[in-house]
Length: 492
Image (cartoon, rainbow, N blue to C red; front, top):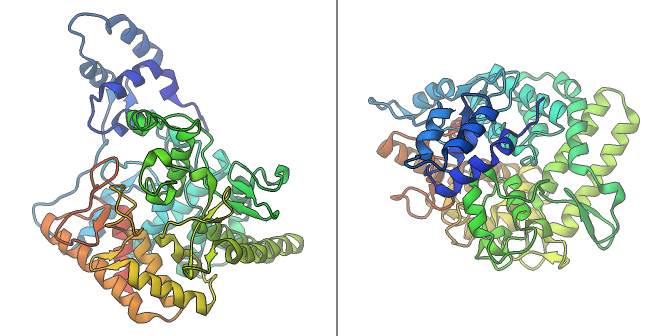
């Protein structure tokens, strides 16, 4: 796979375009496809940019293709919501059998989220698969798994999304859970043996660097605590402004530390870009410290990956590997209790690697140990009480208890956590709370659809008369994971 980041080849032009803000959305330029050889565009730009009457936007539009940069889907005749989603699966299907601009090639068709997001996204695709399962579209589910495997085999991991500028980070590792969904659908255990090597490669990516760690130190995505225990954190290999939010990052970076950009990018690997969860002062993005935090969601997902590797090893009669991954999973389960269970609040929280204690942020990622069956019944009861009292509103589950204007904070409700919340409560017998989570959010989705004809990226859980906002870009419509979670919840 060609990993050349063509943005580097047009850096001067790219920098000028993003600083001039000729597009409302900075992602536009990252997704542009050069219509001529980049060397020719660069030469032409250098020759003309100083000329009187030179128009930068006209130059860019004459040299780059922006086809498919944004998908807005609204119909004249509004269909019932479930029929609308069934049509959307086809309208959001894409192929990329060859690289174009920053778009990576993939061997199979895939579903894009919609709106400004016109590429394959990693963790979005799991929640999209839930809806594909409900729709009986098993082949597309298998395509998604095959695309993830292709990326892991060729890049070493599944990038945040299928663009060259995401080759420095991944997203929450859902590949093993995707295999569970395929197994749940087809009842074919061979899914685990077929992708055993892929599972191992993804695990190696997340654990890379652990061998060389001293106590109380971190490298890449691995941290060793002062007591010598291994935990994982989100990380990004680059420490530069994100191309897709270039000027925003530069402006936010004033009076910040030397790893500000890496902290920003590492939060993007979590999918939570952005939230008070990452801020040292709980309020301002300039205090972001993602690199100092080991996360309960990531470590829970890696426990599931270890369990899945133990299963695939057993199916292949690889006894030594089965024992190894069984032991790793058992050890991680202990670590999740030791480092992420906060006795004071009786809830799961992230762990601050430098301060050696739980972070103060109250957030919905506390659901992961329940979603994956890691918690005991007493812990689950405490978390359920916490969720009901602090996170559940008339429009669904919010992500944090703080309102900062960041999109992964109050008052927004995001599709993934409605499914995680529903399933987590079902796992431990809290059926009434599960139904309330499901109904509150689904009713909100239906209301917005009735008023707008659209399914949105996120929803306002507090004020169900208002559309959600916050973050670096307007609320998007489409929308992959909303479609998926809505269909799956309505089926349950």
